[in-house]
Image (cartoon, rainbow, N blue to C red; front, side, top):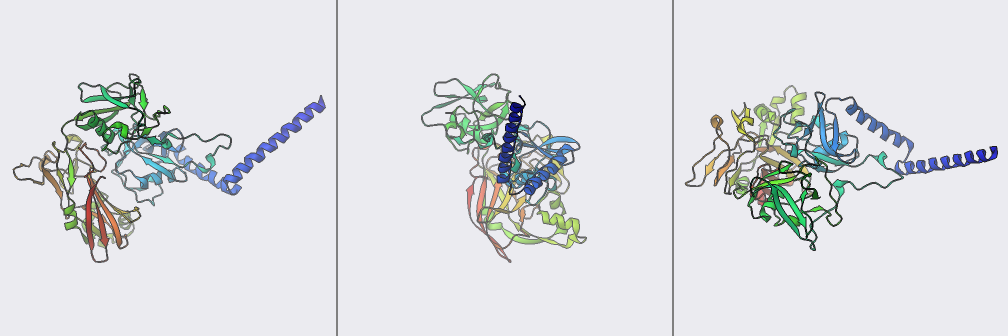
Length: 509
């Protein structure tokens, strides 16, 4: 009996040693040394301490399937809040992943990709340059100041931490990495609206071939997808796109399609990208009751940017910071200017080099372009002495020839009015005296180059050849007939003495 017990313990010891060796070999294969593994562990611990201690500015990801994906929430005044996707791009996403201790960013997400925001929005219109260590070091509108609805939650998918590899199980394919395809040509996708008060609205239901009808998962659903649905049904253009159960949710119509992603000019929803319907993949992150819904309308505005005006008015100006204090309140200069303001006693005598231009947009649609915020939500601006109805109406970006963004303007907010109209068209909208704001049919809103923030701060940008991109309604917040004429992409030649903008053409934001 003793010999059998001794033999059993010897075998168990051997198996334990063998298992430890296998794990050690896997760890060594992943980390070049034990010190590297310890450093990685210490770094992640330090990252999570900030969140566990509920320190101001801590971040966390929610709604994802793993710890390294999801919508972003930030801690302020000991309460968690969401981040709006206005001006959300790769620069902000990289900072989030870096702050959370992950090796890098795979992709950033918008339009509530991981579900609608579950809490108030703390941050909106984030403006990062990429070198910030934490997201709170970037410029934004102010804690709690936003014009966002729950479907505009910003998110991110980071690379997994180096020590997150499970050597015994294969890693599952994340929903953010699920491939997307158009509906297979052998299948027929039927579309209809149900649950609305009229034939022009309701939840979107689809049917593949002769199978049952079902809804579409609302994650990432936007005006781009809604426009395709309205066009396919012959109902004009999308006026609203919803992620909601108002018209009946998943308890009434179970989702059979997810991951829908349209460019916006497709003739049918089947031409858009979706998760693989042939394998029956349906992946939803948000409120499981929420489904995709639309309101269609035959009337819609359509803004067209005037790129000739940009070419004719673009020029350089070296402007003293003393004359830019209002603009600095609106985050209209680069971060270096704010560092000078903070560290230099005589900062007012420094100057910034600005690329200035006039931007004009004409409404070529069949309905007035109106701000989506209600009048009682407009913000009074002391510097400009009028109300701003839209926080982000235009963006100005400069890219190098490899496509990397090297400078950007930040037009924080706008007042919309009829600056000029075609002959015989009366002006309807005016910013003065708390008047109604908008752009009438066949009228233009013109922002002259001598106005604050009508520029890009290029002080730190080397001379050379670049690409200038100016976009209006860049985040598709207001419904339009088409977004393919909302941007101008131009060649920029920048020297020590002048800037020349040429070869502009229309594009989408």
